[in-house]
Image (cartoon, rainbow, N blue to C red; front, side, top):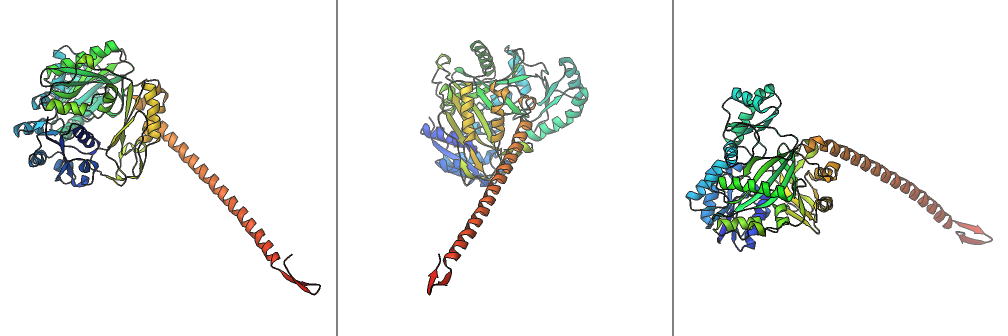
Length: 507
């Protein structure tokens, strides 16, 4: 086991990893930008190193600064969390060249899985079904239009090196495809440094279902079941559940086997996720491999009892998997809501500011992964994710109800958050009946319903305010009348007059 690990991330995931290291009795080193000098992960770690100014390119994405910090503190390994450098093959290669263990897959694996088009080809070569589309990267718009005509519209134009919902465009005809081509290529180049694109048939309606995998460096592979991540906005996941209501034991075994075939084909080691789309006929199609720990990993931990971060560290240190496939047991169900500092009524515009009056949810079956504390200033430089609320129950309905109670108890002032959005989704008939799809938000007019709820709340607040004001006004008038009457009585009592040769004071 390692003596010391550097955590190359920030926010709630850095806190999560540091706590796992403490559980394993492994020393932790935090890194931080100037914007995060007072952040929770900095105080929680055993040691901390400043790596630069707030912009990510000058701090959390700076390969040289992070590797120098690891060497300076004597860290034998680096855990990347997710985002930032977690899937950066160049950074992993730099770690390997400097004798530092990267807690994740090898650089050679990341080069393959990072190219979505080549990874699709690899999956198809081992018999895993993929969506109809290009076998490789598309050379020009003419080739794109010809292929789209063959597979049939609508199609998705995607960056070969994309991720996080970026570099994806939907086209319903040749005109749209031609119009989007240059835009998609430019976005891909700006976001990922390469403008390579490929085409997939757009599966609609679809459910997004992924399989969590683990593998050690000794040829052992397991999967930990599925998570459904169909509630999305612009291809970004918002709510995740496990188990999926459309996956039975037979299907789970089948798509689990698909996932392990892909993992073995790309030489995968450590924790990762193999992602699929399920169409309305129940057919599954391979999408991609997410070669890192996922944001939604806590729901798998809750139903399996397996600490995925601790397993990552053990695997990277050279240990064997501590369990076999048959020993993995799933109990109950879990839901995760990603709480972000965004305004859902303003096109999810990011927000930042000072956290005030913070009240985190709790109670039976509730877990909150966060780096928030009262007085913390949410910076504007980074991803807007500020907390993950996880609710576990006997089944999905039990977990849904627990989540609603948890969200009702989550109070934060000073910044706008997506808590009302999640409450709106969880209260909808479609969600409570598990009619989920990647188009859920649009199909169920979630934002419209949220807007109407907000308007109703404002009206009720105004009505309540008016009623209170009216009550206070009438109470004030009544009090004034009583004071006036009392004053009159007191005046009469103090009247001094002459009667029968004597002075009388009052009555």
